[in-house]
Length: 269
Image (cartoon, rainbow, N blue to C red):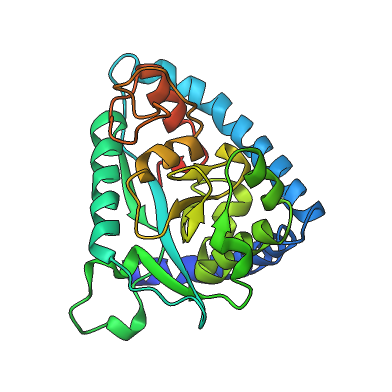
């Protein structure tokens, strides 16, 4: 007897719901400052290493032209508070999402897809383009994540209340993705729009975390920082996407493409 698609989807939800619930609880443990955040670094490092080993095998195959499409899930989170209300230029953010889509698709055959479900309030209506890509999340302790640093200051902040808040807000806005974050297969990348990043146009701590930060309404370094989140390091080549002094270049080398596709964030489904 052939099982209908709706029936398969319902069965899948029944199986995945308790697993995702357990994963959400484990995910919350990573919100604990210092111990929880450090455990998150270790866990992400283990998952990244496993995906890297598998990626080496894939790298060998696509040297012969076998490069099937892969996916990466992202979502832009706008922290809000009664003392921090700003008009959001969703068109500018969407422009950078589309640019990042173009770069990842054309260079590495990686498709960007939204990590947020379409809000039920828009069902039956004309759904705005940004509805599945951008979320405003009210945060009571917003002061910890409004003004952040990069490099060592960012690492220090991630161990404290700032990292805990970024982790909790990610869970709050996309709890349906907890199983992916815990298993590491297709873990989404949260993009937080903050008020300022001291001396930088964006920041990522690479494989250690599941989020990157960009200055509020200034998302031009989205593709560059997303590259860092997916294993890529800086390059001296001025035409390379990972050139540290500009976010305009779009080129990637074959080795970079291999590293990008080997990321735990980039998967087949």
